[in-house]
Length: 438
Image 1 (cartoon, rainbow, N blue to C red):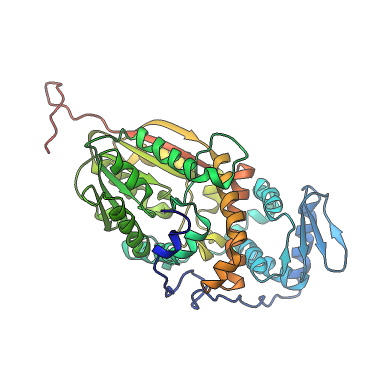
Image 2: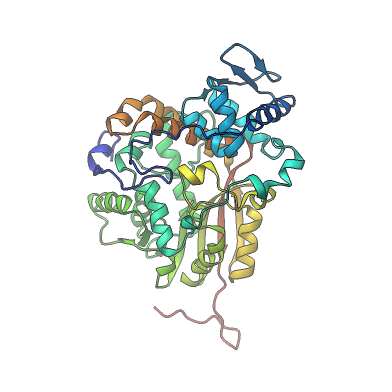
């Protein structure tokens, strides 16, 4: 499918609740700045000024005053509202203030990269110890139970296939690409996405006749490429919009006899497979369900099988410090999401499965490049986003989300891994390999 065809193949609809903070679909608006008792604003201003004494970042106010050592600039247009939001709601308030247009940045990614690189030290240590008193907790309504997962996934991935088609390449891949070198450009993105997919399929040993389970369909590109190798693919998704378009792509490719796409939670998967592949799905599982997710990989794999996993990761200490905190990304973009650390993944696999970690490779710089291309494409096509009915607040939200994510990878705060897990062959009591029943 070409970029020109993509919007035409995606059915347009208005979701009931596309993101957690709004009931108005594509027209978000933004909540007024919260009421803040007198000490909140000056204390917030003082904390920010203290932080900027050590960071290559400047705050520039509308009256011309500026604080900071230099570097990227944050232009604060409404200091009263900005300090109230940050003081009352922390990083959630920081993002909301951008959505409201109370601050902006000539180099948004540059400014956010400085903040991401220094995330552990932005708040004084004595205030960090009181984190439990001031940080918002993750709402119980966003737990990734079977019912909760359907709701959480829908609120992002069922926004509109047309929206995603505007800034993704023709493969409709919504995960890190794998480039040959930097900088890259838009014309190379589709090939880089296919390179990433082929590498995962190679890790999993997918070939003619392979029975493959994919957990998290996306818009179907991995299933298509696996089926083109001669594999028989069962792909699971909770997104009705993604499934509809993925099925259409499979049919157009003439591969419907090799690909089944089911509207199904990973916990409901049945059957035995030679290989399992899952791309950036574990981040949507939630900490409490990580053992269930990895046990599912183990239980669905035949003896001697291989599982290839692509996962965004973050430093373990930051993950544990923030694992119960409600974040801007969770509130507005990925409800119920939680990025794991490599330590958490490997501990969970070791403690809850019989799988072995056979390989791991990080390539975070490639995700930063992928996000840059998406962000630039989204900005170029802002008028088309508006024509789909997404208002200015939504467009600022999406711009902040893409820049915020890119900054995480540029700073090294985030990484992305490709894992290979293997399952031992079944053996009989006399030590011989047990034939697998088919």
